Amino acid sequence: MPPNPTLALLLALAACRHSAPADTLPLSSPAPLAGPRLTDEQLLDDVQRRTFRYFWDFAHPQSGMARDRSNVTARQGAEVVATGGSGFGVMAILVAAERGFVARSEALERLQRITTFLAGGERHHGVFPHWMDGSTGRTIPFGKGDDGGDVVETAYLVAGLLTARQYFDRPDPGEQSLRARIDGLWRDVDWTWHLRPGTVGLMWNRSPTSGFLVDLPVRGWNEALIAYVLAASSPTHPIDPVHYHRGWAQDGALRNGQEYHGIRLPLGPAYGGPLFFEHYSFLGLDPRGLVDRYADYWEQAVNHTLINREHCVRNPNGWKGYGPHSWGLTASDVRGGYVGNASPTVDGGTIAPTAALSSFPFTPEHSMRALRHFHDDLGGALLAEWGFRDAFNETEGWVTDSALAIDQGPIIVMIENHRTGLLWRLFMSCPEVREGLRRLGFTSPHLRGSPPPDRPTGG
Image (cartoon, rainbow, N blue to C red):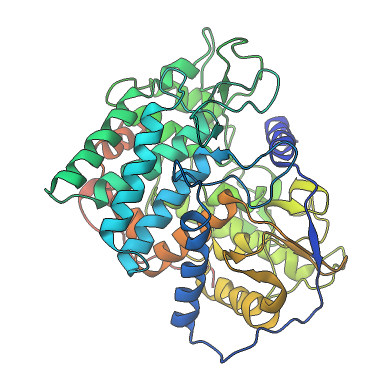
């Protein structure tokens, strides 16, 4: 496929938004983890429990929202909380309640605190900014022209909240009030506010002072499918399906159809781009049997993951530490900043554990082998109290001393979707979402009222 200017801009903006002089620690390889070897199920439990602590113990003490990252930087002080990362964190809290890491009542209290904060926080026609001040609820700007609503981060937040609404379904007053508050936040989002007059498709950002100065259309294929699904599902401010078909899908121009390493890629840029493209939208949106005129989204997720892994196995650049058990290129911290790693276009030898671990539903055997390597062989250096550190580079001999909400959240959520399908089942039970998918022309077993079929995976 030809170069994708939207992808290049997205990755450049991501680097600006998250860049930080990332502290690194020396990585001695191997760095085995002390203690008895855990069974696979014990290991999954341990990783989910550890990772959950990022969203529970390390949450902002006043709002309960997820901090954007674990390390304080010049641009990101201790008050910065992330709306999209908090949506992932809401799903993580549901996993914790279901698995008994915390009591259901404790999870309910935390979500009441979060939603009360959100209801009183600054919004832009109901759309949340990317960053907020966790104490005051005010917007924290990214930069010039990027000081208002972020429709994609709002979609991640709303997806988490709707999933929580479906989970807390009991008739007691506390759960009823949570559901009502979530409904209010959901109904307030004016998705049409992010449509630029005279054009088709959502715009990523809209500033209250400078409008669409950040000229970034939300076009596929990338991590933003969920924004269109929710915008079409809104009971109050829905977008017309034309914006999905002509804006997001570009009348089919998001298709790929080429083979890379002998694996067909339905959508997106050459080799697929960073793996978070297959994680963020599919934390709640179930790709099993999800099909529209453009793709089978299970095939897309599985094959993109396999292509990414195969690049690491073949390792054309000869990086130390790459192989069948150590793979996964996605956006992550690196020494001195943040990079959207993607095979083979951006590959500096940095592996991010979130890439393979958040792919558990798509490649369970490959992901378990990677988890074993990250935990058993390198865990003495990679593991922290809040789960795996964000990234490591064996060639350069470092591991980041940081974690990001948008990388930690998909680990616990997608491991749970692999194990039980919990978040998929909850989110896909939303009647508004089902109607929105129908409006956009999707088919899914969930729309027929039947469980998704078992699907073959890539290993």
